[in-house]
Image (cartoon, rainbow, N blue to C red; front, side, top):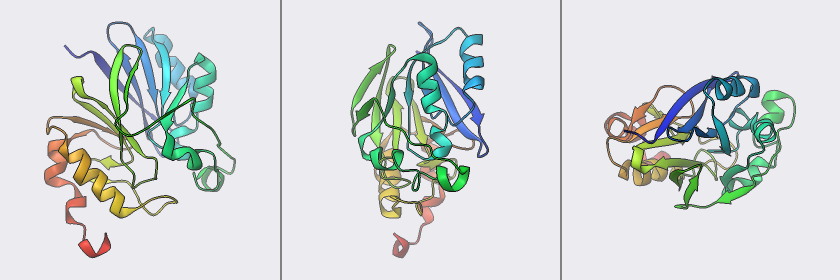
Length: 217
């Protein structure tokens, strides 16, 4: 029996995958990438009798952080993000909010974490894997015992995140996917920031990053 349940909510104009990761034994819940619409999130929390314990951010773009402060305030819980994402989270000119939304989304984490850091929140054990490329502070959250990876905008079904935004890097993204994520077990379930779920094994065979021209890297 799995120790966690992962529920997907598509939020905002870009249909961002917000994940509610629940400890099936205690109903403690992690809210990952709350893009917008705190009322929708709260409806699911209330319906299922969940107790939110933290907000996790895979990176700092506006379409993944739009409701982070509201969710933090609603439940009195901390925001957890990668220390390498401080600049992007704090700057509306590079996190896309000013340009795309017409208003500023600026925030800071309550807990900054680094590559390989092991976390235990709400009785759920997972690690943070640094995967720069989409942004400098992009990360994945790896629930090893449950064989699940929340990949943000680093790895998609058959594809990968853009690297032409501020702090992005194609070379870093290729390494993050091919050199880091593809080292995980093939059966690992991947929950991306947009689109359908996939597995590491499938992506190792079919992801378009495998066909990148070396001169472009």
